[in-house]
Length: 351
Image (tube, rainbow, N blue to C red):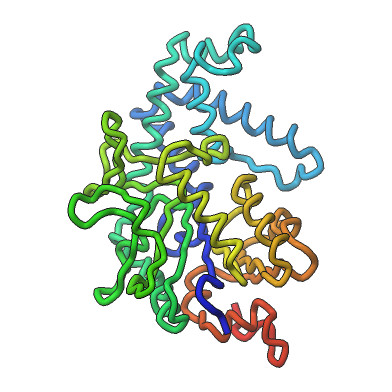
């Protein structure tokens, strides 16, 4: 059915929702709850101003989709805006701005350090948000990635956009999850992802946006895996920051490009298709291999952006949640869902 490297997974925040890890929408609601408490009173005027500006920007960008524009900003986009604003006069666009919006000066009381503090408040809250109260017990369905790999019988490449530890906490004792860190010193080393003739690794996991248990030594430039949570986790926010010049992010982008081009089927679970960089890599892979398929699992609504990434027949969308999908996923079932087995039903399992 499938040969080596012909099955690749891409997982986003929606893959962890059943694991009690908040979605991006829920994170905003949790942030607002905190900002309305006495502990967040200093940040509330600044956040309210940014929220209104971001929602307005969304309506301007997508005037033909007014009924789908969000009532709340995207958590990643909020952090990106804060990152740009905190640069102040060092921002690349500062010479073109001339002066900051008067209301921004008002809500910060001309103290741009407040912007930095709000951004760090969000990152600190992430440490609680990505670790569920049940210590990942509800994420046990991630074990099905390993069950599927055993049936697939080749090392599996999984690219994750998430900061959580659902994979790490659900690796069976007899399985090998490769994250790229040396066993001796827990320092990241890209060479461990290289294919080997006799490869005992079950799953290679590429955390494209970083992880809550990664910490970078700014002096040495090394990335180390530490006990959760890292004091200053190495994370990437927003589409403007996805393509970093430092490893592992540049290396991971190259690997994602490589394995999507080799794949016969790319399975997307919980990804919102809001990242042009990720979408562009998938689009190029589908164009290069006309017989390949992008299989998209969606929960609430189909993704119009996904439909534009390939030729007719290359994009297949299936409604369901990550837990139910992974519970029932088999190699034969995937082969049929992707449309390669024309002798049977294209939807062998109900979702």
